[in-house]
Length: 159
Image 1: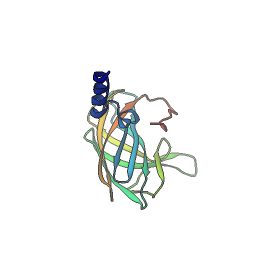
Image 2 (image 1 turned 180 degrees about the vertical axis):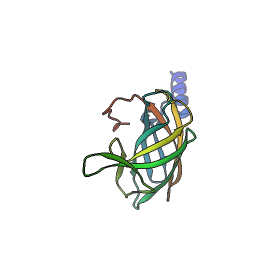
Image 3 (image 1 turned 90 degrees about the vertical axis):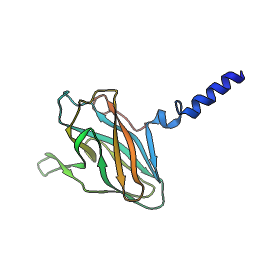
C-alpha cells in the first residue's frame, strides 16, 4: 500500500493529474485564463482562425489585455464582432480590452475573439498551439490553444 501511495503522490506532483491539466487553464498575477481554444478551420489551407477563452480577474484592480502573440500566425489581434444597422456583422480590431476587477470577460462567437491571420500551419483537431496574452499589470501569460471541434454552440464554460 505504501508503494501505491508513493506512486500516486509522485504522479500528482508531476502534474499529470493536476487541476490545471484537467481544466486547461492558466494563471498569471490576478488573472485566470480558462480553456483557450480555436475551432478547427473548415479547410487545411485556411489562412485565418478565431480563438476563444475566458479571462477572470480575481484581483481588486482592473487589468488590460494589450497584446496577443502566437508563432502559429503572421499576425494575431484582438477583435470584436459588431452588427450594423442592416444586421450585417463586421469584425473590428480592438487595440486593448479592460478586464474589470472581480469580473470575467468571455471571448466567444459574435463578440470578442482573437484573430489568427496568415496561419503558418494547418490546425488539426486535438493539437495544442502556443500563444501569449500580454497584460498591462499581469505581464505576459503563456497559454496553449486547444484545437477543438468546429461544432457551433459548444459549451466551454466548464473548462
